Length: 152
Ligand code: HEC
Image 1 (tube, rainbow, N blue to C red):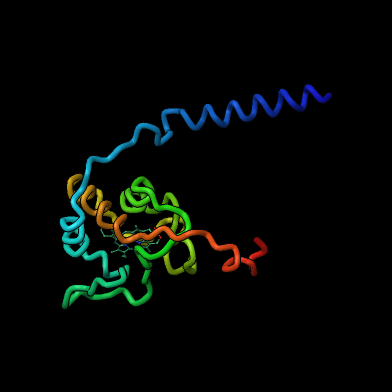
Image 2: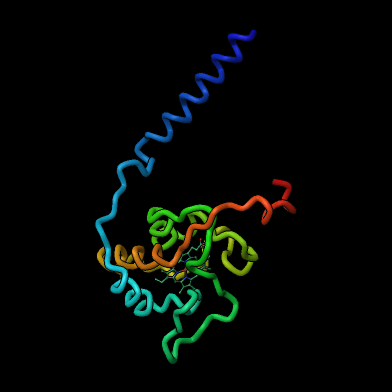
């Protein structure tokens, strides 16, 4: 019986690892180096600030803000945002919805309310944009005392 349990665990974890390295895995994914200043211009060009805010960046004059959506980009996080995370958020936003917002305000039937840019944005623009976005995130240490009320 003991061995049966053990072999189930071994087979199960083998399948998990197998999935990780399958054709759907992000392994081997790598973006060329981008230009952060250009990325900022891309963000302004595509009017991302209609639904987002970034500390220290004013929306261009005349941009109509969506009053119901105001998702923050950048800021302090205890877990690193990889460029794969950020790129996925732009080209496949419904894959993983932003956390900390009322679900009704950011999605409908599991589909993100974010605009789709896949047919208009060039790959170079996307690379620069992701470089700019990443430069706005600051990794801070996880401090136990800040999370004690969650039971950590
Ligand atoms: C019409 C509104 C709208 C526009 C315009 C828009 N977004 Fe979004 N965006 C959203 C919503 C709603 C979410 C939250 C749901 C989700 O994660 O997809 C989001 C999420 C994101 C996230 C993930 C944030 C997180 O904390 O996980 C990133 C990154 C992002 N957007 C980047 C952009 C960029 C870059 C642009 C411009 C090229 C843009 N967005 C334009 C609505 C918008």
